[in-house]
Image (tube, rainbow, N blue to C red):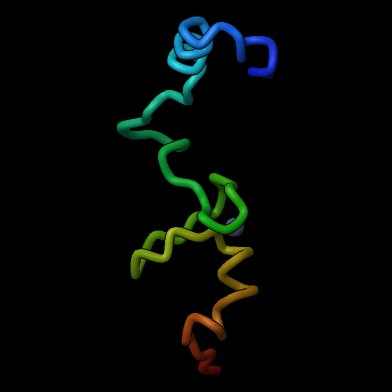
Length: 68
Ligand SMILES: [Zn+2]
């Protein structure tokens, strides 16, 4: 996308400034899974910050044990 603006550095800088993702202070889109990027089913406890699906896949590697 920036290939056309390579010869125009000032315009490219302005383009990047106005198209940067909005910094969220609160709300659903502030938290997202650090493995897959989804915002649904987030687990924030123990500072995991991953979704429930990635947690199921990686729980053993993270050191969690399943007691029945
Ligand atoms: Zn995930």
